[in-house]
View (cartoon, rainbow, N blue to C red):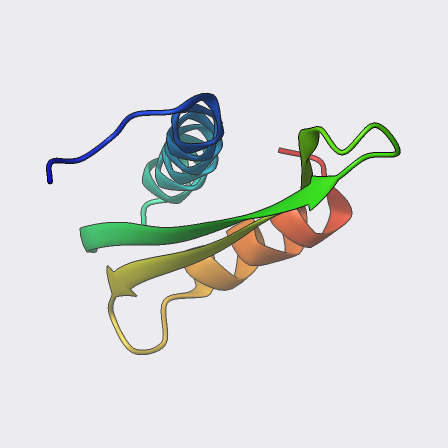
Length: 85
């Protein structure tokens, strides 16, 4: 059976892409040497009172590949933690 594209997967891809693009922008803006960036996105589906499926949670883990002690990455991670991207 092939890959099925459903609304939850589309949302997961959009959220992962948006956060990845934001981190990459911040890193380039601050002079980070970024050679790769991947992301893992997990979507939790839950049922509401009417037994309908809803998205309960979206979690994103970003995996940038940068120089070992890149200060720009740390600056961008602090900005992400504050939600001030």
